[in-house]
Length: 154
Image (tube, rainbow, N blue to C red; front, side, top):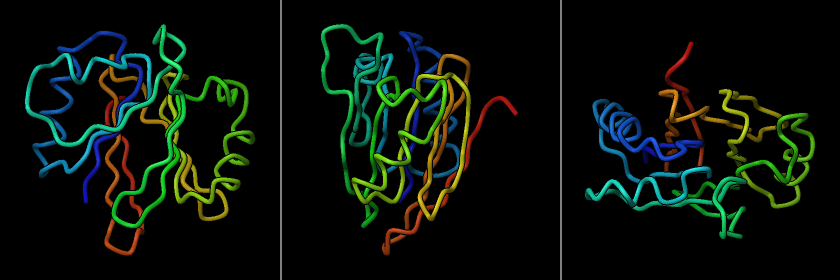
């Protein structure tokens, strides 16, 4: 299963559309995840998309769904924008939540900086800012093993 992960598109739907085409260029995308600050940007594209999983960010006014737990291909994922977990200052709070929720990966945004880190077998991943051309691809096998790669700014 290939999963596209974006965050912080902030209304830049043209850039988001370009990123989706880049994702698909390497193979079909089975699901999309948006980690906030652009909650409606994927659906505003008005094109046929794979299933979308999303959470609200601090700039998505009027939305309270800032965290979600999902399971894709036997991998349990925590989705959050990250502002309530203080990811701009540290990632220990996010990691503690990931352990508490017994997930394989915690995906977050908010910082506009790509970050991929493994802690005690848990992936902490920030795809960066979609408005700056950054995204990530998760590849999840049938046993739930995750491989991840970030794209965009090097």
